[in-house]
Image 1 (cartoon, rainbow, N blue to C red):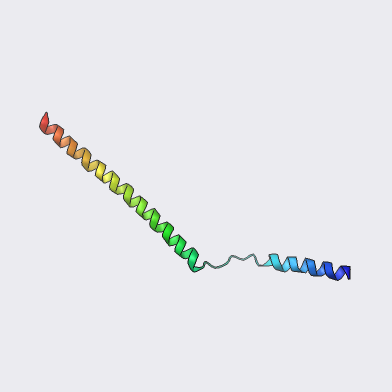
Image 2: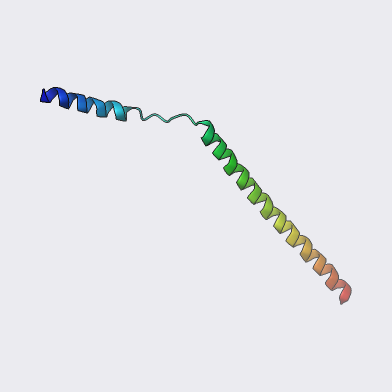
Length: 69
């Protein structure tokens, strides 16, 4: 009886741990990745826009400075 219980217990552990292959991505994971990608893209675009605005402001300041000298 003890051997039977031990065998069933060990067998259950082996079966429970045996399914270690990766699960396919579900729709929630895919949507989450798409949101992450979109947020990253918006951040990059905002940084580029801020740099462009800074460059334009610097050029405008240089023109004003040149005219007032």
